[in-house]
Each structure stands twice: as structure tokens, then as C-alpha cells.
Image (cartoon, rainbow, N blue to C red; front, side):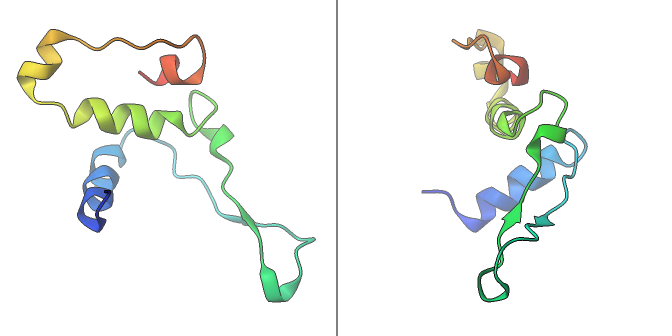
Amino acid sequence: MVTLNDIHLARQRLRDVVVRTPLLRYSASPPERSLYFKPENLQPVGAFKIRGAYNAIASLSQAERERGVVTHSSGNHAQAV
């Protein structure tokens, strides 16, 4: 389970890595049920996946990092890794 502390730690790790994307209100949503978009396509790899990939790798111990990381993707996730 992801805790609030996990979220705070991830935010710290990602602070200087990812683009802080805006939260945009969808203008056609009714006032009683506002909808918002988070345009993660503004990230360097064009998707939110840099957040999870970077945070996971940054959370590894030195010994785990020395063993290396492998990804099976040819898209945004691989670029993020």
C-alpha cells in the first residue's frame, strides 16, 4: 500500500526531474462536477511514466542499482527508465 509518506518522498525525489504540469479545468464540465486534466504530455518523454520509473529507480539501494535495471518496453516507459 502506498502511504502519504511514500508520496511525500516521491515528490522530493522528482522535484528537480519532472516538469510541474498544470491542472486544467475542463470548460465543458458542469459546475457541480468539475473535471480537470493533468497534461502529462508536457513531460520530457511525453507521458506520466517518467514519474513512476524515476521514483522506482531512485528508491533502489546502491547494491540494487549496481546490479542494473532492465525494462521491457519500446515506448514511454523505456524512455523514462
